[in-house]
Amino acid sequence: MRILLVEDDNRVADALTGALRRNGYDVWRVANAADALAAPDADLVLLDLGLPDRDGIEVCRELRARGSVPVIAVTARGGGLDRIRGLRSGADDYVVKPFNAAELLARIEAVLRRSTPRRVGEDRPITAGSLEINLGRREVTLDGQPVPLTRKEFDVLAVLVRADGAAVPRDRILVEVWQTTYDGMSRTLDVHMANLRGKLGHAGSVVRTVRGVGYRFAAAGKGSPDAAPDTRPVPRSPHPAHSTSASPPTATDT
Image (cartoon, rainbow, N blue to C red; front, side, top):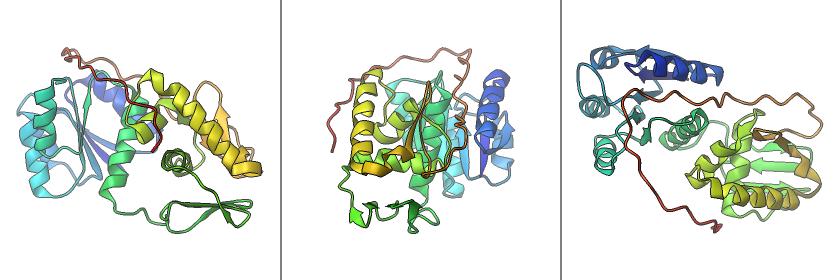
């Protein structure tokens, strides 16, 4: 999976490139608009809007006019009008610097998932002993009987299953399932994990806690060591970001 990183700040670019490569992505980095528009095809573009030779909004519009490659704006422009302009220019998501690397990774996965109608193989069930999970159909069975998961409980399980055995940080799960990193949601995640394990019964051990990181999905009987993806913070851009506030999300499960 190739990501085109368009970022003129070497310090930010180096941190992002390292985090992305440690999580299995092939990264092609450029530092200006001209090189971005001349770059080889990519599966996703991370686009800084404050480029030295051209406004990133214009670059985003041109990329969108050329095709359907997903674009995530990664910028210090944090104002409400800036976000609206970025999204209206064709960006699939908008991330304001500074940000946590785990959150950006989760947003990349979410955008890639939305841009692909259905992942190859998701109609084939995943089995762990007597537990069977079909991500495409959103179905879970245990010993041949349906497991009545709520929407959020299934979404949490799906995030872990799609990580293919890698540890998934707590804040990444919050972004994927609740679209937030608000600290007050931590208890909500704990409750959903407890409910999920309870409903999975004797197969609940496939959802494993990775101390100090988060959780991972492991088929019963597999004892491979836990390995967490990189979660180090991306450095603050030298350009100040405007702060925005938002009301904390509700913990209601729907």
